[in-house]
Amino acid sequence: MIAVRGLTKIFGTGKDALTALSDVSFTVEKGEIFGIIGMSGAGKSTFLRCLAMLETPTRGEILLRGVDISRLKGAQKRAIHRDMGVIFQGFNLLSQDTVAQNVAFPLRLVKHNEADVQKRVSELLGLVGLLDKAAAYPSQLSGGQKQRVAIARALATNPTVLLCDEPTSALDSLTTQNILQLLRDINQKLGVTILIITHELSVVRAICHRTAVLDGARLVEMDTTDALFAAPKSDIAKQLLGVRAL
Ligand SMILES: Nc1ncnc2c1ncn2[C@@H]1O[C@H](COP(=O)(O)OP(=O)(O)OP(=O)(O)O)[C@@H](O)[C@H]1O
Ligand SMILES: [Mg+2]
Image (tube, rainbow, N blue to C red; front, side, top):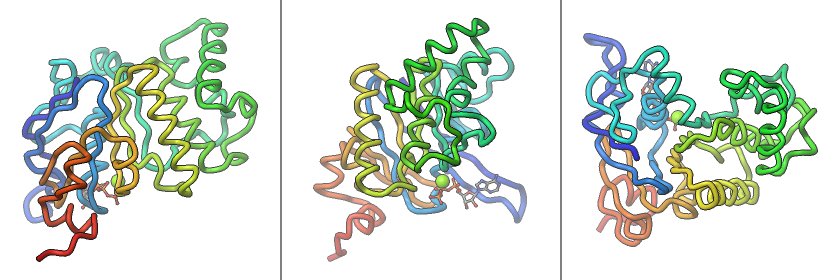
């Protein structure tokens, strides 16, 4: 579904140059839940922004179903955007709009028939269990509810891929479990391929089939989540898991 090859992102130039991603390569299979874990500043959000076509890589390519999307423009870029739902770090909801209007936002860019928009918004709010909050404003919602709105909005255009940047970092552990269950349902029932970026071990352990470890702009380790937890190889994975070096 996704193949990343030699992805490098350097911000700035000369002595101010900062390498946020260095030669990152891996593939994500169709229907997989793939996790990327790393400490603050490792390059996780930069990576997601490159995948979501919000940053142009300095080098390398990002293939979505075999098509390089890293340097698309205009109509081609918009078409791929509709096929890719993004949940940003923080919730990024429009505070002046109601829950229903927030979810309808990506639909209004593509669907013109108001009845179709309303029908789809109801389906999505039903999916995330928020039908009763359709007329509420983001400020009237809890963190978990805001995250559900962000998930509904990301799924509005029926994407085949869902990219999530720290989808649970602002939530308590019980709400985190609820959101992870929702993402698991979306993966199983709708067949959406999910890429989750997180600094929380509990998140990858709970739902990711495979996990990659990002450290200092580099991908240092990648394995099935079970294997990674059983025998972490990189220093950073050992540190994250609290395994003491011998
Ligand atoms: N637009 C930018 N211009 C310059 N440097 C940037 C820019 N965006 C990110 N960086 C730098 O790139 C590095 C990686 O940042 P990034 O936001 O990807 O980290 P992260 O892994 O998501 O961290 P966190 O867990 O704190 O969200 C950091 O050193 C950051 O300062
Ligand atoms: Mg980040």
